[in-house]
Length: 117
Length: 113
Image 1: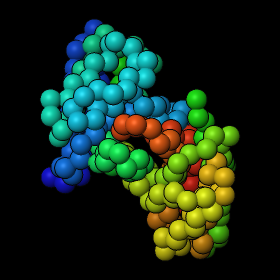
Image 2 (image 1 turned 90 degrees about the vertical axis):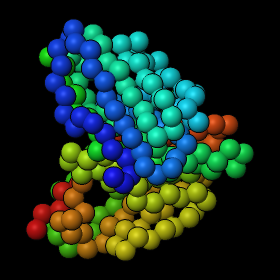
Image 3 (image 1 turned 60 degrees about the vertical axis):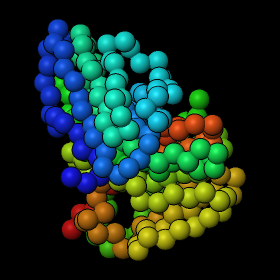
Image 4 (image 1 turned 180 degrees about the vertical axis):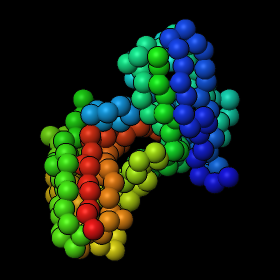
């Protein structure tokens, strides 16, 4: 496997279900991100993990719960979602170089298309 | 909150024509990136521009960063059907730690054979 992989690619879940999205990066990067992409809206940053520590949470509802067990893996745990949460969920990774102030080019996975019924 | 406005939102042209898409903001960014996204896939990085006034070329694609680092343009010469996709610009603000990017809504580009 190369690059950033995401599973599953498609997910249909009811509002009372619990599911998890998985992301794995094979690039040796030290930062990982979750984004939400909805129709007619810009990509929205949800969570950032740098060196396995969450550094940003952009006011995401608690029904979304991220987990980063190591620098290569990232999960997004979902429970009691709403229909408006239906979207493409994208994972990305980058190489952060502390102190150099470089702006981190991000490498995206193919996304999980989530439909909440 | 930094906002990036992309224009046009939709563009459909014939193969062989030239086109320019724009990315504008009232905020200053330390760098700006352009991505292309195809249906069912994640965005793929095309280029990063860092210096005000910088111009970068990638085959038939020319990217320019505004002098004030608030805007950028992408010009495609002799467009081909393979250029079809969603073009996204994304700005980065230099902060202490790893940062997510601020994205525009994108330009949906269709090149008709």
